[in-house]
Image (tube, rainbow, N blue to C red; front, side):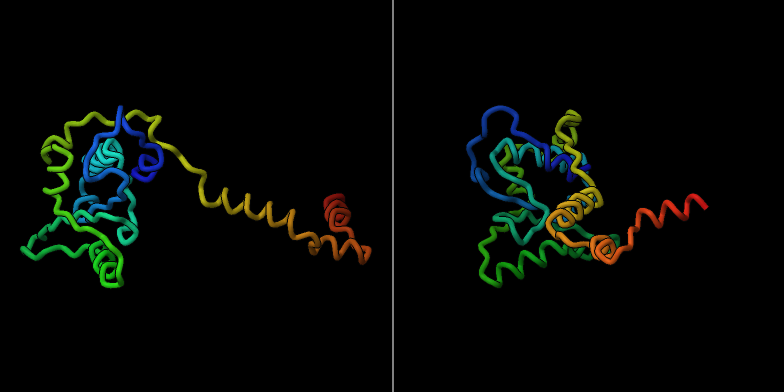
Length: 170
């Protein structure tokens, strides 16, 4: 559902001028994993600021960290932060913001995120399943490929369709 929203979200009104304009952003899994409704609100706010949310952290211009502790008081590991740090080490320019810094730019408090109304169903775009895409790809390749096993057998005098019909009539 989240991916469908990412595919369909549109800005509400004019783009708000900010440091987020034309930027790609990803937020720590520590937050995204357990804050679905708030993430929907954040993605909408980011879109209103002319930014795009992308889930692959190392391909973004901004990464938003969200340190979170487990039951024992240890900081939870975030694989996205790991990949961001690796990308930075390899020369990629990724700015890391704290969650609070992001909220300040958006001019919102964390408690307000859950109060946003849930978006209209039109913003949830359902893409065709992978299986349908693969079948379409197979059809295209079949048209391009030319000679098939059936063509080769037919050239040798073996008609698969007549064999199938003969078996069905028995």
